[in-house]
Amino acid sequence: MRISEPPSASMLLPVLPRYGVVLFVIGALFFQGMLRPSLCQATSATEIKKNISQEKQRASAKKKALRALSTKERSLFHNLAVIEDRVLALEKQADEQTRALEALSIQEVGLRKEYQKASSRKEGLRKDAKDLLATFWPVLLEKQARMRFDSGETWARADREATWLSILYAETGKKFAAVHEAETQTRVALERLQKTRREREQKGRELATLQDDLLQQKLTFLKDVQKIRSQELDLKEQLDSIAATISSLHYKLQILDTHSFPKLKGYLPWPAKGRVVKGFRPQATPPQRGISLALTPQHAVTAVSWGKVVHEGQLRGFGSVVILYHGKDYYSLYAFLATSRVHLGQKVEKGETLGECGFYPLIRTSGLYFELRFHQKAINPLQWLQSMGS
Image 1 (cartoon, helix red, strand yellow):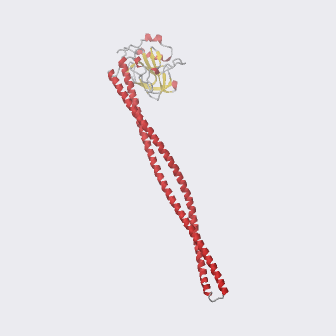
Image 2 (cartoon, rainbow, N blue to C red):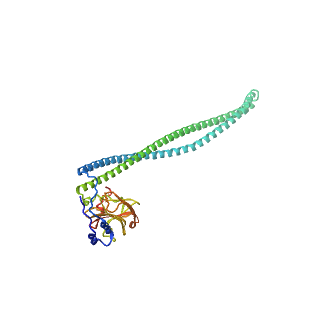
Image 3 (cartoon, rainbow, N blue to C red):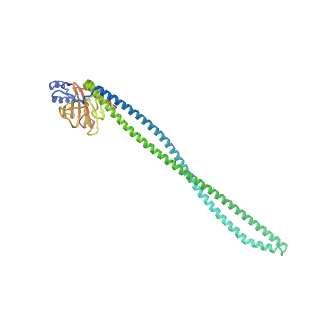
């Protein structure tokens, strides 16, 4: 199919405004001959529609898989929350166990001191009783032996001494028995304390083991979440690729069905993926007849459709500029390029690299100024470009 020629120089000059980016049509002065879009290898509309249907089915399957992964991820996060609650509860138990062990340690020190004190007292009393027995027992025997020969008064005194010794010995025995009982009670309490301590230490080890197990489970769940997120990212990238393929197929279908640039409205790809910092505002002061994109330095700038280069070079106020003619009086302009990879008269395809973006003074960063024009009148590019989510 032939595409009508761009206007000649004599036709352009009377309609050129005095300012703005309309200078881009100067490139048309260099345009010679008729423009034919260099389309991709011919493919039937039926086959393209079939491919679109297949890609949509693939997208549906990927979305279903993505939903399943999201459900699994939510389940993992629920399990993680349960484990974290258990870990916190165990940490609380471990803290209580530690405080109890510290209290037992203090109590053990006190009991050991009491045990040692009781043992020392017992030994002292035992020595005292032994000394008493060693001293008074022979005296008692001697007095009892003399009682058969002495007078009654002597016997009465001996009997009083024996009674006194007997009482003293009995009291010593009571004291010894009391010390022995205290020693026994202290030893029992100490043994019970040590048993309790061993049990608590064992429980502490069990808690630590359980904590380690839960933390290991948590790490496993986190690894699973990371794996799922990686799979989700991969699926999303695949969905983006499928969406781009469907968009490209729609583009080809439009070309096959119409071979007309106006029919591509809403299907044009972006010349570069960046942030729109200034939109289309032709009534503003000064007017904004295109869109301004902020891009990373040296970001590739590509053709939004097939066309022919009618200008490649400097334009005052717009730096290095490439202008494409798309037939039927439709033009696209790409300004503030750092480098250009095309030449005047070259035919280009949709998505073909025209150059790299350069510094855009108006937005004070690297970027691109992009315009679409019909009959030398600026038209809103945002109505022609694909939705960012497509």
